[in-house]
Length: 233
Length: 226
View 1 (cartoon, rainbow over the protein chains, first blue to last red):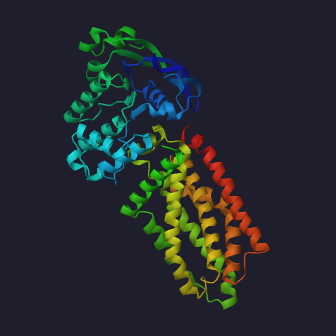
View 2 (cartoon, each protein chain N blue to C red):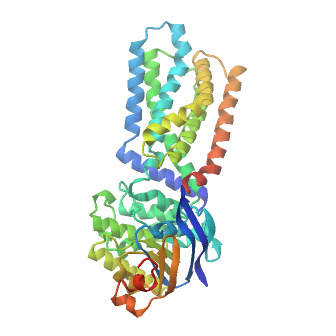
View 3 (tube, rainbow over the protein chains, first blue to last red):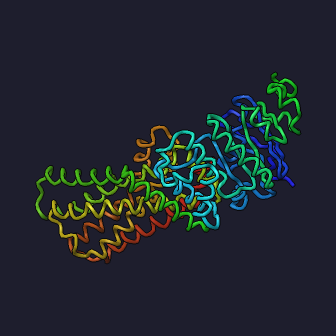
């Protein structure tokens, strides 16, 4: 079953086409690494999948439903460039708020469990603005996983994470995959991504130029994909 | 979680962060008080003239203070890209808007509650007479200011000069609401009832609120997700 299906998606910013008919299919339970150079359209595509941006043309389905519907959004967890937490709320208050908005059954219990998982339970009442960068990133990770989403959309998830946060994130992603979740992540950090990825898609100038299984060469040679499939290699 | 529950969660979050930081309520309350005090020294008016301008003066102060409050509405979501997380959640965009409008409404009501007695004191206006009717006018006009202000706060959230843009967009739209509120408030201060022309002004406030609330709720998704 397809968890994510983007069909000929175009996105214009003014006259500039950031996406040019991008097609993307992600099987449920797989982990797709969305790769591409700067400006290829990765963030634009992920934002459209997460319903943060409207495609100019084309459509996106989440488990067969329109991605703009509440049912589709309930299944999605998003971790973007910003950490997406409020500096003037405590860690616990932040997660309770997002738990309520996501419609989890017991927001307080879910928030406490999420804080335990990322190692922030002892500072649950601390204001997010008082946290170190690494702690804030772990709080962001807890927020994205809070409602146990069926699909995780991650935009450069490993960028500027400290080693502890990378370990927490990789462990959470492995658990999510083992639990049947689907992951779509854009990244430049190919080594970390390839440890998890089951599939790979290469985006160039707003088009998917290759989509397929992760191949063994990708684990050892980060440039192999670009040399083999990239039109501008 | 229903849309209204999500709206209430957003409103509680905004009120909680505002009461901790006091970033807009302090500015709006001090602005309102300073303007009221300065105007009281600037003009040497007789009792009748004072009553004639009382409603206008009060609503000018309230609408300027309101702009300071609604300016923070969606701007509060910009740091850390919190707006993205709210929009990616299952909560509908209209609940985000309603939550923000409700929190701005409460904050502006607090500012108005602080400045109304000061206004009465410095201008020697008997604002307690007809108070229930005055309260109805204040509630209706305050909701109108916060609804339109919150909508324009969403429009300008990604604009670099949003603090300048918001008043430019806001006040022309508020003209009919302010005319209605100023007229009825002046009449109520003068001891008149909400009948005749004053009832028409009250209906204007109700119509304004209904139209702009419906428009904003319907269009907010197209404003926030582009």
